[in-house]
Structures are given as C-alpha cells and as structure tokens.
Length: 224
Ligand code: C5P
Image (tube, rainbow, N blue to C red; front, side, top):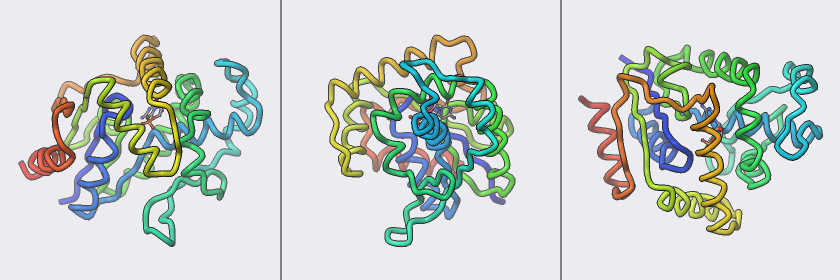
C-alpha cells in the first residue's frame, strides 16, 4: 500500500535531495513544503509587504486569498517547478533575497494555517514524500514513516552553495553560513517554532554520509 513519508529537519541538511531520490525510486510524488513558504515570501516582496524584517501582517492577511501556489513539471527537464499565481518562480524563490525574509513570513500563524491546509490537501492522495519542518508533527502526524535530519552548519552551507550553483545562482559561502545560522536561530527560538522532532521520527545525522549512503539509508527505512 502507498504511504505518506515525512522528512523534517534543519535547512540545507540534504532533506530535499534524499526526499526526491526516494520519491523517484519508489514512484511517489515529492512535495517541497519550504518552496511554498518561499513563494509566499516572494509574493510579499513583490507587493512591498516587508520592511526590514517586519511583515505587514494585516495587509498580507487581506492578500491571502490571492496567493495560489502549485507545482508543475517543467516541460524541458521534467523537474518539478513551483508556481505562484501561474508564474514559474522556481529560480526566484531560491534567491538570497527570499531566503533572507522567509523566516518572519513563515512565523505568521495564518500563513502556516493556510500552507498546512494546502499541504494536507496535496497529501490526500497517498504515495507522497514531503519535506519541511513540521510535516511529521503538524501536517501528517499519522505519516507511516517519519525522518528527522540534522547535519553540521558548515556541511549544510556547502550543500546550499552547491545546490544554488547547480541552479545557476552564485552566492558567497560566508553569507550562506550566516543566513543558515540566522534562520536556525529564528526557527529554534521562536515560541511557536515549527521545527520539532516527532516522537516517532527516526533521527539521521548525515554530516559524514555521501549522497549514495543517505539514499541507501532512507530506502532501507522505507523497506523495513
Ligand atoms: O526548506 P527550506 O529551507 O527551503 O525552507 C525555507 C524556510 O521556510 C525555512 O527556513 C522555514 O522558516 C520555513 N519552513 C517552515 N515550515 C516548513 C518548511 C519551511 O516554516 N514546513
């Protein structure tokens, strides 16, 4: 039977790489929940709803019904791209401009409520692998397989730099480390932090694993 697989953890610790690989391998759909928070953030930036690190929450609330996010395969590559109001924003949502502001946007309760509801709708059809922060706790508390991934900040920064390079986005390593540390801090210290390990999640520290090793590890958990 098809099941729901939840992969949570810190940013850039390899969640999406392993989630995508497993989904491809077992014929499941992969959903990147972080891309949805990034798309809302891009919307806010495009509509001047962010000043410094402050989001104009009341204005955003009145815009929520106008924000439509979905995922579609790119006709050229077959890779899944994120769409915001019918516009392909896959590249833009990975920019530092968005990475820098995504934490305050994703901390807004009504943003989370809307994203969680959309994610649960996508998960009605079983056979999905979703990665994020709160998938095993809030979005799919009854997921059959839950993984919680960690890795050191330097390992994660290097992975983020490589990932962005693959997408043709050039970034500075130190800037990425700073951004990761800042987001970790916000993600961990805010009262309603979404990042919590579910009691029944299996812990994986992949700092010293190759991609092949972590893919094999995850496949073994799926087959257990
Ligand atoms: O996974 P990614 O790093 O792309 O996520 C971007 C940001 O979105 C995270 O730093 C976090 O603040 C937020 N996020 C979240 N809940 C999720 C996924 C992402 O709050 N399920």
